[in-house]
Length: 271
Image 1: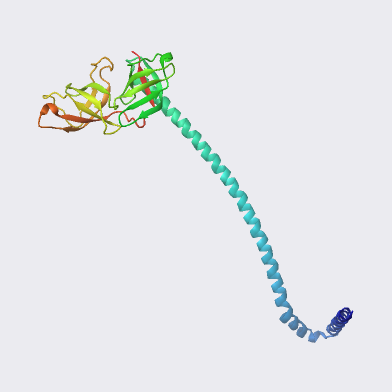
Image 2: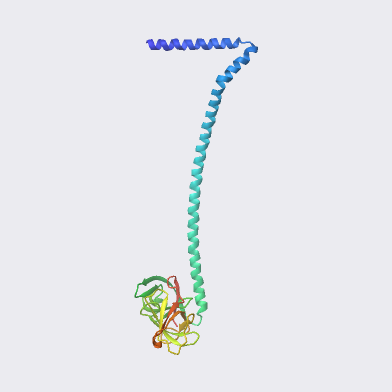
C-alpha cells in the first residue's frame, strides 16, 4: 500500500514539473528563445541523432538479411543450373562416344572393302599375365565361327576361339598362347610374332632368317600363312632388335598397331 502511494506521489510530482517547464517555455521571450534552443540542441539533438542512427542501422540489417535470403535463393538456382549442365554434358559425351563408334565402323568398312565382315563391340576383357582374351557382342546367329580373324581400324586383333549364339571370345595376338606368321613389309622376310609377358602392347619376333635385314622402325604384317589370317594386315612396328652370339637366336620386340587398352570396336572377317 505504501509503495503504491509512493508511486502515485512520484507520478504527480513529475507531471507538475513537466507543466512548470511548459509554462516557463511558453513565457520565454523570443529574444531568449535561442538559449532554449541551444539547451535543446545540446541535450536533445545527440539523443535524436542516436535514435536516427539506431533506426538506420536496424533498417540496414533488415536489408542485409533480405540480401542474404536473396543470395541463398540465387545459390540454389545456380546449383540446379549447374546440375542440369553436368547432366547435359554427360549426355553429350555419350552421344559423342556413340558418334565416334559409328565413325570407326564406317572407317573399318571403307578400309577393308576386300573382305566380308561383321562389326562388333568389345563387351568384356579377360586379361591376366598368361592370357589376353576379349569378348565381342556377335555370335553364331550373326554368322561368326571359330578361327575367323578379328581386326580393327589400326590392324590385327586376333581370331575367334569360341562362340555362342550371341557372343564370341577372341584370342588376341598379345595372348601368350598366340602365334602369328608375319613378314617384314620392306624386305618380305618372314618371322613369327608371339605374345609375351612384357605388357599389353608387345610381341616377340622369332625365327628371323639369318640373312634377313631387320631394324627398328620396320613394319610387320601378316604373311597369309597358317590358314587363319589373310595376307597384308598390319601387325605392328619393330621397336628393338636383340642380337645374340648366335645370329639364328636373335629376336626383336614389336609394338602392336592396335592399342588393346582402348579397343572398343572390331570387325570379324567372315570371308
